Length: 347
Image (cartoon, rainbow, N blue to C red):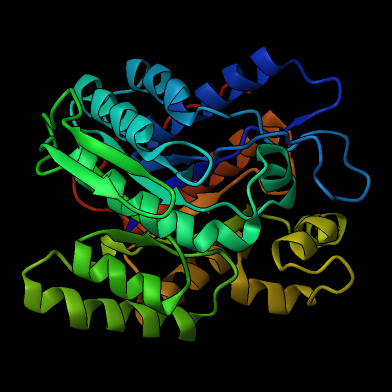
């Protein structure tokens, strides 16, 4: 089973943004040393409008995730760098293609480009883009992006883009025919599109097991006859995680962070009890987390999990301690041969 780390650079009031980037880079170095497969960076804009009760500050300070990604490549050995997600509704898709191709070249093929259409209302408001157009804009941008990243001469005429005959440079270098592309969706039609186009699919953290199993089987039925890779690694599952040896600390954490779970579920008023949350997230002691991950593997054929360790805006030290505990007491249950040694936490 592969484990990746999702990272959102949440910066509460009084937190130095430079310190936040430095702490995040330290966590990423740890993940690389621990044998994590990849990390996924969020993209955020105008992020002081969080909607979270009692929170002040910036919910994310990565408007250009691949800029941070190059710093990560320079400070790690092998961990892959993904975007979760690069918004192709707010940015011209040719510009995104150029970023991806340069990153592919300089990182020697370590890019997993996850793309999406966005969902935060304040971002659409400030970019003056109608949310009702998001799906249509996304699909058109995705077609342009795919064609542009292949390095071939093309032209395009659609509702939102009228592109004369162009050829984007640099050409794909390490990853052919283009850098690896994922779409973030739980929508059946978009999963079917991904299967036809040879894209990976990133799931939402709150999707049920039954829904994700059905989506993957649909994906496989379409992609496999076309000769595409349908390994489960291309269909990663995202889960928030909190791990601690003391069950009482786990309970206190869940209660303290109910507003964040409510927001993730799309409802600020109600939230399931802890036992129900454990069906949607990875929460508990190391033994409980092992059992929850084995259930994902056995019931969903899941082989790649993206874990959000700093969900609930934990401190850097708390995130480091969680990662260390996970590496020491959970990862060995799923380890492949010759896995790298775990790192020492530097809070």
